Length: 359
Length: 130
Image 1: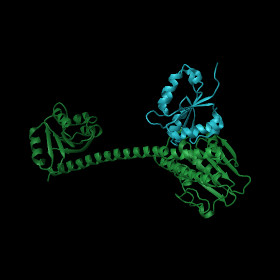
Image 2: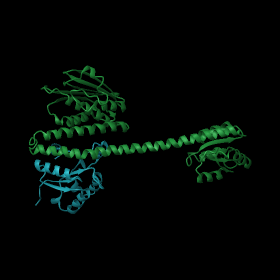
Image 3: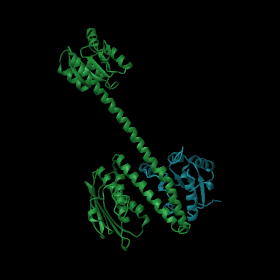
Image 4: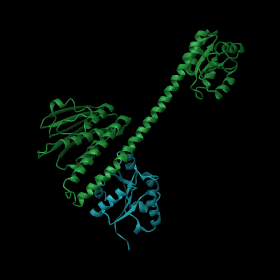
């Protein structure tokens, strides 16, 4: 039976061998033959060859020399070297520089050669399939990235306009003019915005490869507090950053991690607490950074401590999105960090994280 | 005589955001005059037309990032060709609903951009820049 489309080139300076090869294999494969390396090159320039068999001992250009000469220009075809004598140096050269798949001694055994060709063709197919799959995956990834980018704009832009309008309504003193409708719109919009932001953080954490940039923790923590404490001016922050040495790490993920923890520390305060406090301690050394974020908020139930890092876990009373701490954990996994939590119900929670310094 | 009125140029393809931000600026009186441009091209035309006439030129630019055809970064590429005398006294703040880290870094790395402000525009943040 002829395998459709398997094209084989056999190069040998002895016409007899070419004829014998043709006779043995023409029923199974599409055979091309060449009497010299130069002739062979002409063929691979014009025909899409999948397996090349070349005799080693030929005048002008040897089989190995030929294979070497096409490693750059025609890397895809699988190469089989055929030789009548076994010279260890030729062999070593063939393997090291000619990218040889099989080495077969002359006179060949039809069955052995047949099997080698079959295997070579499978190897060729695997190589091409893999390349196609990679190209496909790269395309999908690229599309996904563009999709994420466009969500971050297209979906969020009109929402942000709505939030802006609510802001204007407040400034013009109309916020309470229609019962609680405006405040309901505001709550829904911020919730939707929060979900969009968390979804984006999650996808970006999954996609982006870790980058290494210098991190100035003093600046970063101050910025994050500025962002997240915007809605709440009551909480007192005590920040201690000791960074005597530079820290190199993944700024995006560290920002996501600290941002989520700081925002939680603010969000899960006790309503009745008059003295809302959040302490942030950062200690950087050559090996790692240790960050501790503790609050005197409502705390976490003991039986919940195990589950808070799982996706979509929410406690019944204080509903978040169930994504914040999950994202924190995922981001830490990506950068080799660790997190520990301890909590006293009604007294507060402490998160301790360690992130290696990639300096 | 030199006109001391403070002028802001807002460049955004989104009508609603232009309207919201113009109102915000009117209420807070952060600027005396607003030059509204619905595209980067329109803004460049305006600047080119009045470049010899400092009275007409803005002292501050609020620039949206995502706009069709010419986006905020394309605008900045053209902006740097204006005389230094003008650009030195007219800082640019980018304004966008982007959460894309690349955009944020790219914006803040640009020497003409003093800050990337996130939408919705916070007059407090804007005020702090002035």
